[in-house]
Structure formats: structure tokens, C-alpha cells
Image (cartoon, rainbow, N blue to C red; front, side):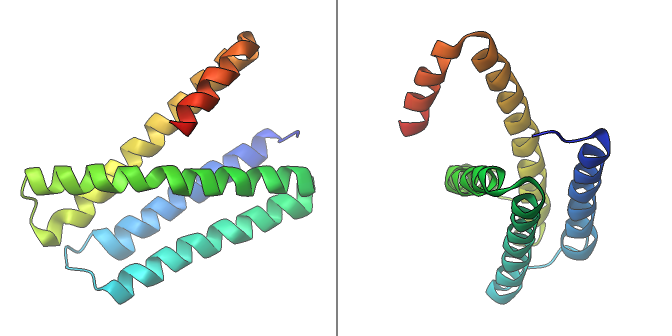
Length: 142
């Protein structure tokens, strides 16, 4: 899959825009979100991910579309453990309910940066030592 620099720049711009929208439209004014509000935000992000995956599928073909959706589902599954960590941290530090969104957003951004770092390091390791793919797979299953 060949992605030009403009494609990566566009993806970075989309991610920065989404985080900005989240901050401005959701987190900047401390409040206690309702279940309905949280559901709408979640549906919006899931919808965007599905549209993006459809675009990948349409532009680069079914193989890359399937890889995107496999990665998306895997990330969704792996992100559940982050929720437990965030709940523990928020509870331990007794973060007021109205400020929990700010803490959660900071945690999500940190998790994204760390995931990116681990993905890049893991990719480099797999390219250098193909045998490391198997321990990584076992680690995922664990």
C-alpha cells in the first residue's frame, strides 16, 4: 500500500481536528455528561471510523479495507482495559465528576501516543527479526 505524504498529512489533520472538536465541543466546558450525550459522541466516532474504513476499502481495495477493520476491532477490544485503568485513576485521585472528561481526554491522548510508539517499535522489530512476530502474537492472546 503506497500512501503519499499528503495522505499522512490529511490523516494527521483529521486526527487533530477530531481531538479539537472533542475539546471544544465536549470537554472545554466542565459538565456531567448524560448517557445520551455519551452515546451520541460514541456513535459519531464509530460512524466516522466506519466511513474512513469504507474509504480505505474503496481506494486501496478489499485487502487493505479488511486489514483496517481488523485493526479497528482489535483496538476497540484492547481499549476496554484502558477504561478500567482510567476508572481506577479517576477514583484514586477523587477527580470531581465535572472534571473527569478532561482527565479522560488526557489519558486517551497519552494512550494514543504510547500505542503509536509501540506500533512503530513493534513494526521495526518484526521487520528486523521475523521470529518476534510469534511472541507478540502470544502476548496479544494472553
